[in-house]
Image (cartoon, rainbow, N blue to C red; front, side, top):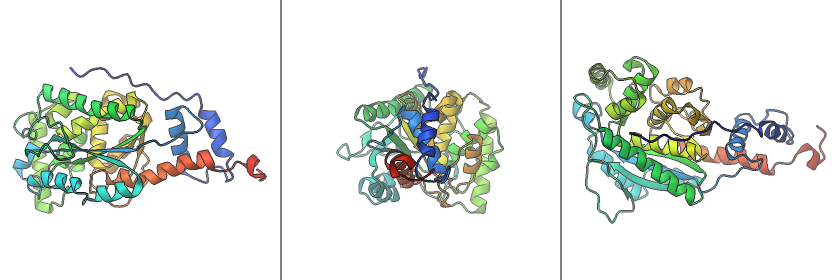
Length: 343
């Protein structure tokens, strides 16, 4: 069984003091919009009037999915390991955005269907060589699910001890929009056609095929328990993200949430522990079909809408400067009193 996490709702004792501090900066009340909400949230998470973003860390989990055998992706499965190598070589969008905005990147083999050289600068924690085809059987065993969640937790515990208080999650896995769409369908109780999108670029016929396959899988596995949904339809990268999210919330760390795949992991974490949302800031609204519905379900107000649907953690990487700006104005902007400005 998966262990019980001790996730507390954020203590709101400092809320009035933070509001007072925000409102007394040299600006009209509310003039910094969402940045004020972020500053308040981070102050409450960290229980301080002077919050900081320390050693922001991007954990990129990669894994393969057995469901790709059913033709749900226009790309072959080999692209997963090839993109991991691209991450290693610094050539992917996430490498560029992370370097630009001050993220430390960790690349994690959660379950890629290849044997990487042990000399590569990645974390070799493969659960298996991809999940099973969930059209025919559960994607993973209960033992594999437990191991994936524990592994995600271990990464958070390590980086928290190293001084990080802000994490985000990226992912790579051909077929993972199919897994995420079914997770969304089951947890939100929505028809699969409202959840499944074009992923890496399916045409109309490919999208119809994808929806048909996923509908058959849903009918085969009629499960409603969030852990069972994750075990039946998820990927190893999604399961590791669930474990990382629960651990980060338990450690009272700030999480910057990326797009469709990462939010599907959050749907599971939230279904298990609703208070996990207290520790989340939503980076952007993905252009992948279904993400806006996920955000609405979670009552989330994303910072950006750039029509992106790349994954990898790119939306979260781009949002960090805005999060940092919210902390900076709270700490460094003059108050009416200190600046000698009439309020």
